[in-house]
Image (tube, rainbow, N blue to C red):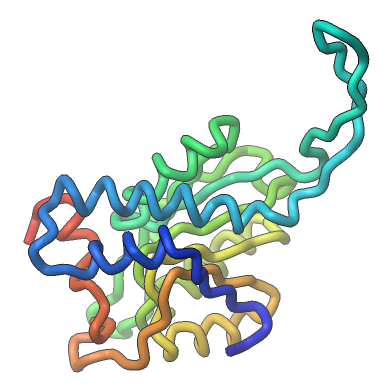
Length: 210
């Protein structure tokens, strides 16, 4: 696996991913699991955030301790399935700003087209974490990252629940500067570009539209 791909082996994450894959997991449970996994993954995604030392007055004295410094975070879900990951991240990072990006595939060229993009006004000063539960072909995620870069953002990470190897290869090729964080890596895609074994359509399972 490429050096900029991080696969989570934490037992809690692996357990919850197993429940997420189960076709019998209902919409309510699926939504809760996505949120919980996103929060757990957020701990690792933020592991390298810089710290600075400060002095805090406690009830019994002065403590030299550390707080987060440097770049602030922004999170940008890819509509619509990425929305399911937002609450989990915000429960961990309540001060993070949230942008949104929406894409559709042009029926003739088959290329991703941006139909909506609203980023925090200071996005270029933030580290942006792009949220998308499934990294299948990588086409939509790659396009979303490209559109975000075009708005001046330099520091981007991609966080997904399940990644297929073709999607990882596409992001590594198109955006070698972007780190990929995922909870599982699956080998292949089927004829409909669904990850196999994957978990089906994440958007449908999140919002009950299947």
